[in-house]
Length: 187
Image (cartoon, rainbow, N blue to C red):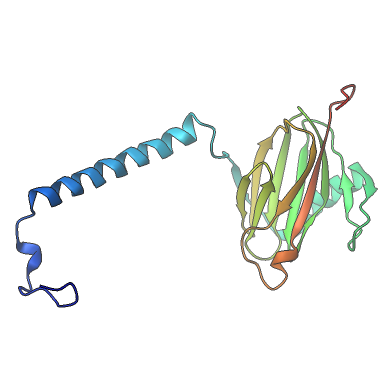
């Protein structure tokens, strides 16, 4: 019999399973159960996934909160095509970050070792929040406010990249987060 031809008997599934075939099915089932248990373990004990809070919001409400933080904590304006404000909120505060066609707003400046509550939302379409090189990925959905508690542990410049295709300008959707060394520490 050839693999190209259909089976000679149409009810092939009623034939008994060969011992070798049954062994491979059992191995595959056991492996699936092990991988499922590992995913749960990675989340609970391995700190592999971010646990986020999510709330319903509207673009207007979130923009008002974001603009209040921008007005209060802006330290300088980035010299880019959008003249994006750089916001340096105090440790422990709520930080708002907006994704919209094809930009992130504002640029954040955080302190190493300090904890912040990062609020994320999209104003228009699904976007991604991929923090590089830290490899943190969150899907940002319009109408929902995602809250993540973050504590930067390395100083430097981090890129925020949209990793959900959002249209023709998707490849230009990049933002920044600066993490500066703690006051008094020189790095």
